[in-house]
Image (cartoon, rainbow, N blue to C red; front, side):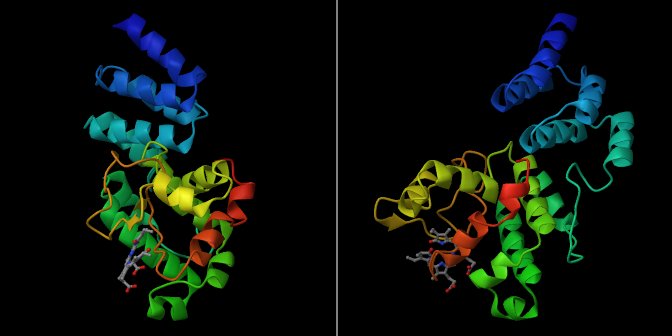
Length: 230
Ligand code: UYC
């Protein structure tokens, strides 16, 4: 249906993130028609990570050999460039997130943050806020972009930061908003957390609050977020 395809293409390039995601959903019903068009848009459109990642996922799920080889050619490491100043390999995280294995991705994210912090943190298994402050910007952005790209823009530290700023930097309200606490009751790890896209915006990735708010405070105040385009 060319009229529908044309109208969806318009929506994919001219509207806001929410409507772009809706158009992608509508487009997926027309697949494999529209695959070529979507591949072209993926290369040229100025999309937020949540839209880019969703488009990339739809294309990989098509199983079309030509599109697949074009994707491998253009994006050998996935849709997000895996930049690291510390030589970390973000490919395993990319794989888990692309397949929406959010619980394993969450565990791995915490491990990667400890690796970023260095041998002492790796041995300790948790972070000091002073270590978080020293995280290189490219690494934190890579991790955030991976979460955004493979959650339709729902998950990521930058999403948590946005919500937290919107709440006047009120932690207590943030916990409620992202379902880390309901009333007086903390959500219990891991079983009570929501490991899929039915979770509220900002629900993942997790930061344990057992040792206080300093770590998440350092994460959400990191200089990475004032330089990025997300
Ligand atoms: N846990 O409750 N959490 C753990 C969260 C708290 C606790 C890990 C998040 C409150 C204990 C992750 C919340 C609390 C352990 C998270 C949460 C508590 C543990 C694994 C909502 C009790 C066992 C990684 C804010 C009232 C390990 C890690 C230990 C683990 C995440 C208890 C990812 C977002 C205040 C006893 N919890 N955690 O960090 O350290 O260990 O003893 O936040």
